[in-house]
Image (cartoon, rainbow, N blue to C red; front, side, top):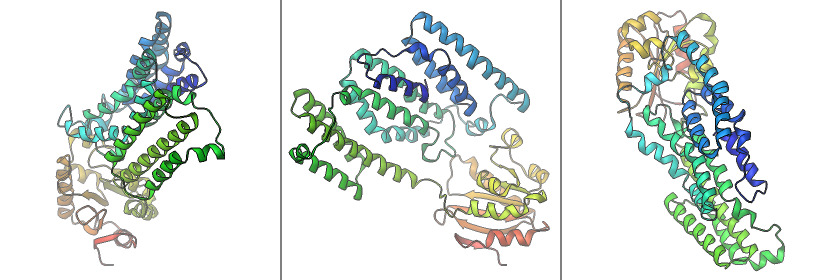
Length: 428
């Protein structure tokens, strides 16, 4: 079950069906198997989610529909996926992608990342509260089915304990399940939302002044700092209170609608503040030295020069130089044979760039940086620049081969930027 499937189910339910009567058979023809194939082709771990979605859907089908789903899964997902997998294996000569070998080394389970993945569910806490509130007002059988369909999104993020969370900025590996929880919240709350009458008028709003004042105070929170734990507690108490008030008929229809708007505002405030705080942990994307220097190096793109860079994304993208990732993410030799002086001599780098931080994890990052620094020193490279990324201990370090015919120009481009904090720059 993927985003498209859950959206189909949510829209069917939202169309006014009073009971859980979704036409499951429509999902067994093409959408589920084809979506599973696209997930697996987009990212290898998409196969894990596809399998979880299939396992969640099968118990909800009768025998005929279950057989049809399995048949179409074999035709539209397993066979095409197997053909692609065998071709990739024959072409690259290795069972799994380079990135898996790089990120899985050292241990089968990387339990130190448990808090990082758990953080995603803390971020989802208000949405989970909304889902829980909806399930309290939903028939038990329907709620159980909704839980079953949400199961893959609950389980899938933990699959990343199998690898190092390298480059998992802002939980981007796990974040794609977030829209599924939003859809699940809308789906679970449908019984409550369907009972709320439409239409606001001035007199009705004035009669609900206390609730409107509460809404205004909540919106004011946009301009102050709120601790997430306190906001989750307040939101949880408000949701529980609303549910109790609706059950006891303490709130009239208009008050319930305004109270719902208040809770929605609280959710938006929480999500906005958490997203802003999360974004503070990202790499800077404006005035980033990797982008600016990559663009500057593009002038030499047609000369056959080689770049060895631990930041093997932006620099190769903007410069269009031949690039070697010394950590092995895009280099078959490094991931299977390891980085060595002999291999660096073989590729003959013209520019070496590495990201240095204190006590990096995994520790082999520090070993790679030490080897690159030693190689640059032994082979007579010129230290072109040391640029602070975020503070004096978080550095991007650039070396240029001294005997490169454009060495002076390359050093000038790297050391001559004016938007960054240089700890060191080579003299012109």
